[in-house]
Length: 262
Length: 269
Image 1 (tube, rainbow over the protein chains, first blue to last red):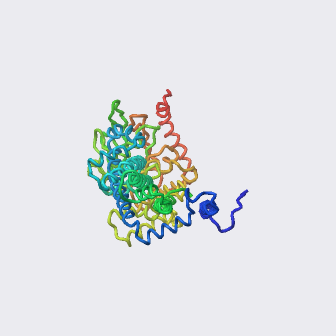
Image 2: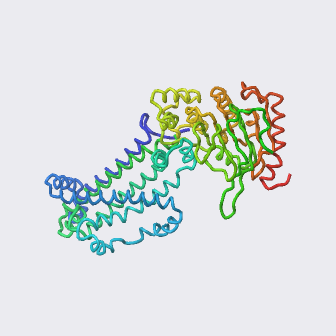
Image 3: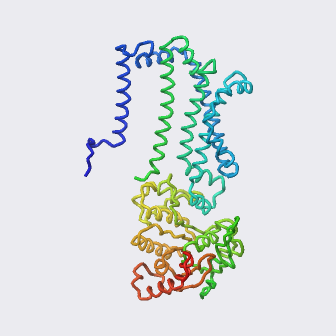
């Protein structure tokens, strides 16, 4: 017997979405209340509504347009390069077992290395411009795409490759029509992770090492005690990260729903 | 013993002295030497103990795997490293494309072959109806049962109107009742298309019910040790299991196979 107390006509998914939204809205309201009643001091944190107001003002006034353009182009470039390079290297490693055996330990320990320490080397290599930051983003994001590509290609059922051969498909058509669609869920995870790592790498790089971009803007505002600007920029970064990841998640869920047993 | 003890002369597919050895540090001699002639429009089944090389035989005949020695030909032309036009294969595993609907799965081969949309739709509609999938045309494989997914794969092969259909234990994952019904559908398909069929199966009753001839294979390396001609009329279905001759055929298959099956599991007869 079902013990569900769900209201008639409301799906489980909708219920989860509402609950999640209510929890987040509740936490934001609580924070607003704590800030407004000065339980949390203004020097520590400003109310979320003030953050949002300041963020809108900064964008409307064009004060952070250059920073937004710089960060978006750096993240975009790092993301694009890491997806292409990660996919190509992943496909190569999957096709060549010896290469894969050789790089496996490297990939396993990749994220244990603090790559920011190589910034001076990257500056020496690329100059004092956006390239070292893009390089940091690429270094962070590429292995995620590589690992997802390897996992995806590993899991293409052998029988589907046989079906491609029974249909007398060329190797290119087999890749486009069978291999990639079959590996798509893992490749999609790779895209999501690559974006997240490219974003983290670039923002963190700007925060520590750059003279521009949203990461630098947050660091500068922090050092200048500009609390309103600092929190507004933090909110903007948070919203962009959540927005892009959320959009990718929705897309991924739609993709997965078709394949999940009902 | 070769599997050539038949009166037909119009051979559709032929294997001559075919062997298959998988290379490696310890090469595995999986198959042969095999001689086999399949007549045009014949329903030929292969039974044998696990690991005897049945699927290897199918792969070699389909052109999915090259023989180590010997010659394979289809309609008089040598099969050389590529699946010949006119050959369709249904695999034991679920080979439906999970990202495509039933319709798109079935239409897959027709679109690859460049068939126009109207003819594609006509053939897909027929195949989907024939396989009892009309209500699920726009469903994804994940929304179907295992048996229905296998029917999608059979329909995908059927629409291409192959002249030789190779089936590798296509009903292996199904329950007995569904297998009997699927067998009926396969017989209907075979009669309507006039195609030749080679069925790999581990089920003796299935082989006895469906086939014109059944080849019994030995334990690895697989060779034909017996060939049973059933003598069934072309118009037949699963009700043939109540025919007095059915038990005799099944008994003969088991008699030939028992010793080999014991060898396959490492026991003496």
